[in-house]
Each structure stands twice: as C-alpha cells, then as structure tokens.
Length: 400
Image (tube, rainbow, N blue to C red; front, top):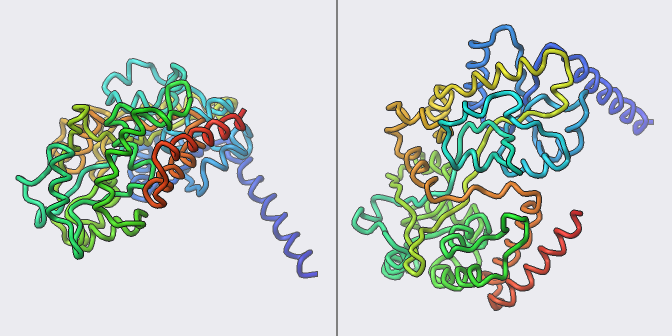
C-alpha cells in the first residue's frame, strides 16, 4: 500500500511539473548551472533593460544530459541555456540548437575575443553568444618563489623543481594524469588529442614526445596522487610553491592568505612554444523549439542585444573574476586592473579552445586512461598511447 501511495505521489508531481512547464507562454526560461553571483548580474541587467519581458533563470543540475532528452520538446525544454561551449557540436548534430546569428547580426560580434568566437563556431555557424572565458594559469606563491625565479622556460621550471623539491615541499604541482591539464604540454609539442575532423590523435609522434618530456616533471611531483583535491591542497597549505590551476581556485587561495602571482606559461625550448592549455567559453545558447512560440523570437533578440553590452562583462568580472568575452570591457579600470582577469586575457593568446566536436565527449575517457597508465602505473608510453588510440577509435565508431 505504501509503495502504491508513493507511486501516485510521484505521478502527481510529474504531472504538476509538466503542467507548470506548459503554462509559461509569457516568459523566457533560461537554464544554467552557474554561481549565484553570475545569475544575479544577468537577472538584474535584463530586468532593468527589459521590464516587459519576464525572464526566469532556472538552475539545472545535469543540464546537458537533460537537454539531450528534452531539447526538442516545446513543453519541457527551456528557451535558452547558459553553459560552456564544448557541447555545441553534439547539440547541433541532434538538431536542438539555433545559430545565434538567427537573432543578432554577425557584425555585432566584431569586438569579441577571437578565441571565444572560435569556440562558439561549429561547421561555420556560431551557436553561442560568449559571456566570459576561463583557462588554466601558472600561479605561484610570492613568499616562496621570487619574481626572479618565475620560470620563463620549461627547463627553468625543471631546474627550479630540482632545487626546491624535498620531503616537505614541492617546487611545482599539477594534475598531471588529467587530460585537461596535460593537454597544455601536448599542445606545446604541436600535438592535439583530437583533430579538426574528429579523429583521435593519441598515438602521434607529437603526443608521445610531449608525454615523454613531461615525465621528468611528473617524477618531481606527488607520486600516485594527482587528483584535484590533493594537488590543490598542497598549494593552499603552502606545501607547493607553484601550480597550474584554474581561476576557480583563486578565491580559496586568497582565503588561505597566500600572496598569489600569475605568470605566462613557460616556453618549451624544443619547440619554441608555450605550454598551452585548453580554454572554456561560457555563454548563451538558444534552443530551436523556442522560436516556435508566438513572440519568442523577438524576445530572444532583445535579450541577446542587452547581453551584447560590454558592461555585462564588466559586472561579471567584478563579482566572479570572469574574463569578459567582449574586448571593449577591457578598457574599464575595474577589469584592466584585475590581475587574475588580465592573466587570463594574456593566457588566451596561447590557449586552445576546447574542442566542441561530439567526439570529444568520449575522447576524455581514453586520454585520461592513457595518462593514468603512463604516469601512475608505469606502462610504456608508446604502448599506452597505441592502446588509447584504438580504444578512442572504437568508442567513436559506437557513436555512429
């Protein structure tokens, strides 16, 4: 009896949810997974600029998985969503996205950071209005590493690690078995994880050379412990002098009382290229089904016009250290004087936009497994790369 009652309650809740979703013709629904401060800026801005348009921001966990299921359902899908650019290819292929240029003219994007527009483009169509971007940074504890010691080259970094690594302290740390982090070293050797056609490239000479070169740095980092919590804790507890990490770590660094410095990524002398990490671009996307509702297209156009304003990027920078996608924002002192934001702007000149091809979804699995085999289990590099290549090819074949 209890199970039947619970089933009835569940069904009622589902019907109520569908009913609520259906009765929303007067509002624009925007799904997101962002921090409260970011959404508050967007809500306040849109309410002030467009008082006659009701915009409802809805926080959605597992946002991308849910969109795969309901993205073409006009009753349950949102009108727009805010997320990183890396799912654009997948959503374009399952035909749930509308190009952003269906609502704004291409000329209105001429002041955007090149990297952000590259990230937002899939098969020559722009599917995202970029808001801000983020990339990994070389950070150091100014009390432990002097300005003179900040490495200009990877060999400088290695020599610093040799001199400053012992039983109590590390000269430098990073999440070396995580493909997102190690990709910067691979790019520095002119390699890549996935080519422009969606083919995995894990067994190329460039990838193998990058990993073999990187190994001597890994040998001076925590052995068998490269996960997020361990690596970041070492820096936060002042047991590591420098780190490659994301801007999301900075609030914790400040809270820990660390006088943090930012520097350009070291140059790999063998290639003359810097360690070049991936960059992620956060922005607004429009679902195709939203344009089927009367008056929606005009509302969406007005919302996007407001979000084009560089002042949106400025306010986001002030509340969340977000690096604005609109270049005009950098002429404002609150942005140009922010060390973290300017470090990301500088880093964006070398960074690679994370691939937005659908194949990238499965490649993370193979690439991370490959690095785990090499760095944590001691498997031969060429063998591990060859195995990972075959695995990635098989996984991609299963996508068809």
